[in-house]
Image (cartoon, each protein chain N blue to C red):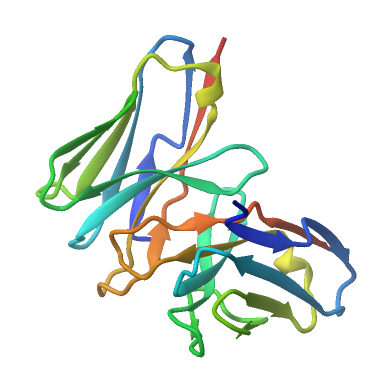
Length: 112
Length: 113
């Protein structure tokens, strides 16, 4: 069963704008990961945030985690056409096993 | 620096045919996974192998079998393909800790007529 769900399902913005996508999950986690998938390719890991962290940065990416609300957000600042991709959050399956489970993803289109 | 390699990249089968999808990783990872990705459904786990010699069912195992041939290789077999198994199949590997990222192959696009 899916642990995390991304929102919105689709997002269309202009180059230079910021893109924010959210992930909600159901049970306690020890970390949450974000991945990107370009069209026709496999998923690529972007960033991991641990349950004791509230915010993490990597280049133009900013991830927040609110364990009280069981939610995370991924912010891409100053977006570029090359950021066009689907973005997924991954959390361990309920029960704490070492099985990352994925939501349905957010499809981001950045118009040049 | 190959990472996770999947073969073939594309395949068309007729209903009832069998096929094995191959996956190999060169990162000495303990865990390997097979997912399928369908439009609007995200990734769903078919089978996984937490370590060499072990395999376990995931969310959607029916119609599939797997073999963890050695630490590097994890294959997925469709014994009698059905149109409902038309999908993109992804193999992934993980060192073994939940604090590590999964590494994915580029997928096998499988169509069953």
